[in-house]
Length: 432
Image 1 (cartoon, rainbow, N blue to C red):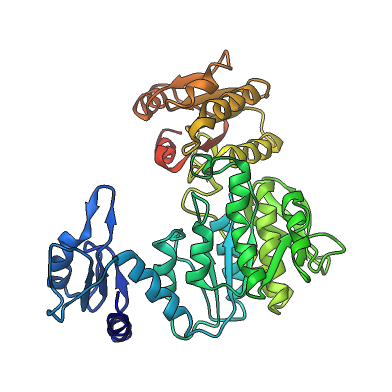
Image 2 (cartoon, rainbow, N blue to C red):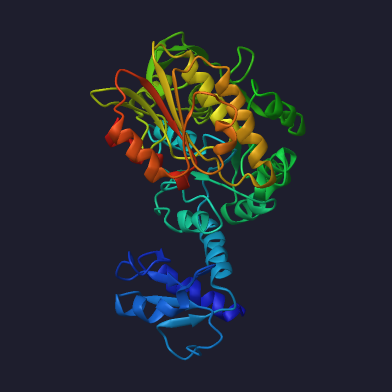
């Protein structure tokens, strides 16, 4: 894309009402970026975007010469143009921008941090989980002009992606929630996941940024050595101290002042997310009482650690996503909860590549040795787990699972539902 085209695009964006990549939801006056995917080419919908009120369509189709039409800008690559535009717009904000990545807990941690920071600033955070090579640019380009501090979530499924996202978002501060067995198919191994996530810290090192590091996590604590002045939490000798008290089922913690605080978050694994938010609150001078109020007011949603009372059962709905690491901590926390009869409904963990059979088989072995009363498994990959359990109910498809639940009513159970997003096991809830 020639320099004059860049300048023209930026000028037209500044005169617009924002950006869009979807003609189904585009608003009047937005700039439409025609992106390509495995099964679509949005260049085909550029005229539709203009007819629906788009101020401009950015296209990269070589078959269409629209360079003389003021409704269109022709570029070499629409995605790269979107990413460039976001990086340029980011430079207009002389504010702290917190980059956040990790294997598990990114979105919950992002929401908690934003809740805390919003008590003292006009804060902005990634909407939903728009955390990839398209979502991060869209998040940046949606930042209100009066934003005083921002929290940008970054996700990846291959090495090099976090580095790219950092160069778009240009974080001044950052943190990694944890490093686990996520996206093994793309990362190639746990070591690949470690390398990919650490790209955020490498960016901060190169640009003099500030890293927040959970000292209770051995892997992350080892990374602290790379920084001259890392901001550590949640230990007693760290910059920020928060103590886990317990969960019944909601997490209780002791703040630095000694105050005991009860949250609406379930699962010990969520304590680190809370401690992270409190650390950042302290660093950016949010009064502790306001930070605690923000944490206690946060209620999980979107199938992430949601506590559901159905009338027949108590359900921990954690069906937004799953990988071997998140599945392990979710089960550990679930087993610690009070409940005479426990049941699990677990679905496939995706994107594990060559590790899929082994990881599902290992999960089955753990379940076989547990005290869970009823084990229900669903999905082709979960057959490897079912093979390890003599009393498991196994269904290859979700349709078969739902038929079973409809005809075999579960009652008076404490139930954990967890699987990768593609399984959509929240569909089980009406039958429970």
